[in-house]
Length: 333
Image 1: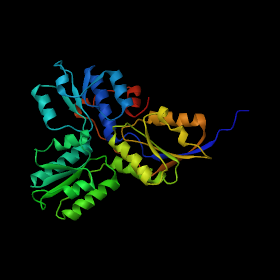
Image 2: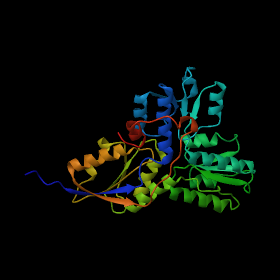
Image 3: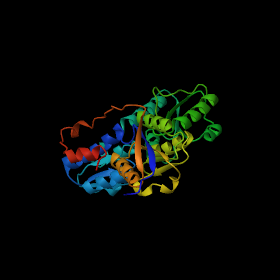
């Protein structure tokens, strides 16, 4: 008789993993490869996930840091879901390059909100993380001197704008709701005339994943967040899990990174979610790895339903995808 496996409860968050913006960006690269053939160039990682990037590379995508790495061979270049400064499509147009902009529509909305602030005579306060591609892209929509980056409440204390009565703020879409609320509250207390964006900047997917983690985290021994080390929304989920009551939150890229040493004791309870750029195939692999060591019972913790769909650009809509293509686009193997 085989030895009895120890019991483990897995609280699995829903929603988790790919959002509509990530799904659209990956689909754009796959469709471009189908329509134009390889290579299709991609400026920066299309989304922040090594599994996805490596999979697209195998299909014929070539990832570059800047446009000057791309030869004049007539092949298209795709801009990542995080958005790009205005100078990038301008440079592509100067070289008569065929470019496809995979910027998430919700990031584009933030760009428009920031430009609207400037149009109405306000200095833009961007709440975000310095150097993140989305922040670089948003700041790159505006003229130098018209936008200031705020990362922390301490930054608010040090911020002294020329006209405190003419400010408008926007935020990076992938931030922690709670941390952002603290910064916004500090800004509004110091600058009561500051104008908010016309709608929430933090995207629905970030909000939904954080709320599911909050609901799942209390009294968990370990909380696994599937995502990449350079994924802002995934790192925020780790922070949310620990603040909401998990003993330990860990960012993992796959089953090889599960800290099994944290799962001692009788009947551990583990929470799990996945960042918006993490494919479901990695979640499945982690569940399989847990089942090899434990008698796993899964509790689904669902706090929202997501039915959003962002269509690709018109030039790619008639390009057919195979079942295998769609499986990859949707986060499968």
